Length: 443
Image (cartoon, rainbow, N blue to C red; front, side, top):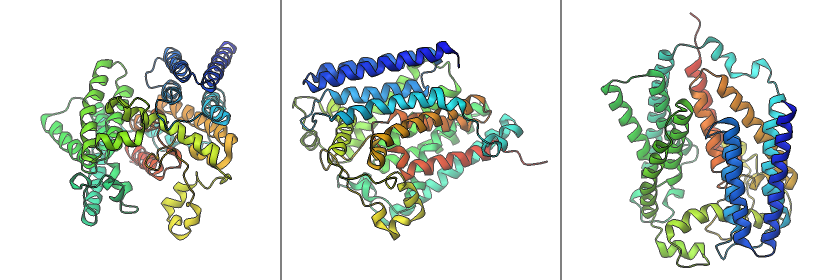
């Protein structure tokens, strides 16, 4: 890396830290609107900086800058009575994970070279099949994922009540068969895989359009029947990200249109969950009780997660030294059933109903501030390696792998993605499809 690049990165991080210090000082004096506004401007500025640097709307650094820092800014405004004064350690963690991420992406990632036997392209790109072969394999993958997802959904429906037809507010959380639900929710990959198929196949016949339309409709029906707003959003937004990756010159208005179309469906699923306005307002406790619910709900789904992290910082009696972040291992191997004590830790939140947390919640739970900084370094380094691989790869599924991680950064305010077993199940499934699509058997 050139010296002037290093200098620009250092200056940028210094400005970032200074604005955070200013926002923290304003917050500590009760000037919450100014504190949050400073961070929102910082988020927009960082996004523009990395967009201009890389010329990509979906670049990892740009995405994390906008959504992580922007989320902190919204939360710092403290528009709800549930919000409390943040601890200094909370401010350090919110700023520190971003700085560590950028350091990992810019400085550590470029210096790491994987052993040849670890590289996926050893089995794929070096013997890359032609586009038509990869298109056929993508179609097989679409059918396989859809059939397994539908079969698992029907199996769950045989034992549980379908959430869309239930009058219970939390019907979806009960619609799970252990181990089976991972396959059910994998239907989110059908739509983005269809986008990749269209890209690799080129012009499609009317019959192919009909087949893909039926597959996508069936796949999207699953999150609708489950009343899972997040799965529906993930399917659509993953597809948008894949479109942006394979057609970088696509006009922005088409992307905005796709997101706008998603809004009424999201609202409809909220209604189907039997969460009425008075119920939600009672939970969110906004300072301005006249705030419309369509503003209150998304605001609280972002802002309260940082307040939940602050609760953890204030109330955690002792760290768990890796057990929280090892939950995917305990879940996917079944150890959580044999030794419940491995996963039985309290969650610290502002209110019992509001259980979503931030990306760094488990990192702090395990190792405190040091854990948060290490997590940021590792995540930034991994994102750099994935970004480099995606640029060099001739395998279309690399776009889907990149889009997944980008989505986890977009929703970094929402949950601890990398200590969630579903995340690792989805990543493993994507890698399997990646190898299958790009592999050429010996003649």
